[in-house]
Amino acid sequence: MVYKIGDFSNIVNISIRTLRYYDDIGLLKPEIVDKFTNYRYYTEDNVVEARFIVLLKEVGFTLQEIIDYKNFLNNYDDSDDGTNQFLIKKQNQISEEMERLQEMYDKITVLRKKFKGKILTLVKED
Image (cartoon, rainbow, N blue to C red; front, side, top):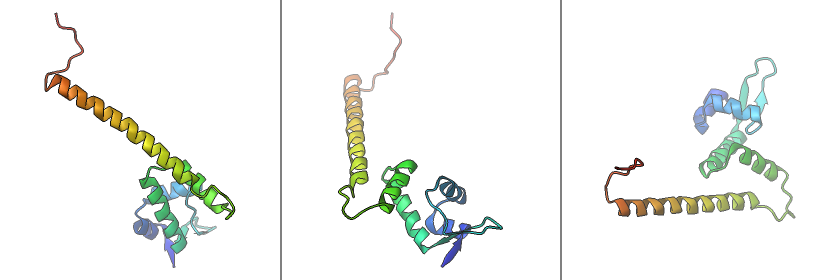
């Protein structure tokens, strides 16, 4: 089945503007582009690819990381040891971010206990 960009947009829940941008940066290319009208047409394979992109974005991948990951997968060789390196790297980044956020959370907890609802001020009182 072939979908016009508007229909495809509704199916994958990605705006038309974003789909055009993804095409421009090489992230999600339509299966067919009409040479005369420049209309974009997408297929079921594009639906799967779009959903994969959405999933990667949901877990914190940047667009560039997704492009790099897709390039890696397209060039994947069964003998390559690095099948999950992109996922492991992202998992480590998330773990580090969680630790940083936990430290911030703990500091705020200490501040709340210390000041117990008192107004914090940076102005020196006379």
